[in-house]
Length: 215
Image (cartoon, rainbow, N blue to C red; front, side, top):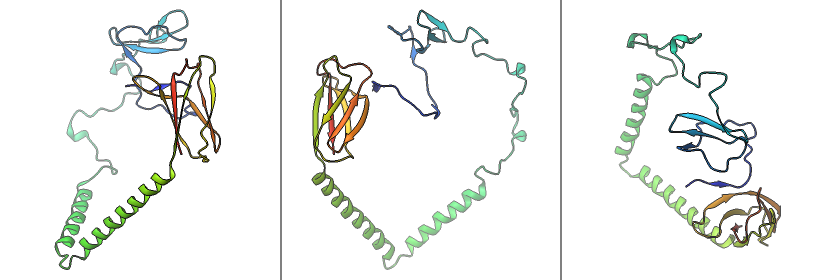
């Protein structure tokens, strides 16, 4: 299931890596100017210019298919094993042998642990961790509280939610108020220790979303 973003996403000039344009067999309905998609039938990228879908590869190039022999700066592609070079940064046999030696040393140390001191130390660390985890769970249970509110009237886009949890570290989730109860992503901001703001680009319809605040 996809995540519903109800506000713009600003990557602050960071890269969008390993992304895939939406794949569809037919063009999406009710497109917005600037919207793009990849047609899986004719294997073409399209963009909506406000009037029609434009083939994004139709101008200024051949659409993305190139002959290796036509490239000006051809990358070197080895054709046989002897043409491969061993980069110094690659993992070498020496590296793997060294790692195997370290693992064997640990095994020997455990085998020679006649008095059980190493095992006891590990057991003590585990016991301390479990105790700390139990204490943390107790603190979380005692500390956190929850407040919920249903929002939406078809007019307001910016809501102020008064939760009275007296914390600036509240965690806010917004989801649909009916099946399938999908989580959505509006703009959420802190007003003060007892109020948060939830803002949408389009006004939600009546009782469309529920805001859950934990703090």
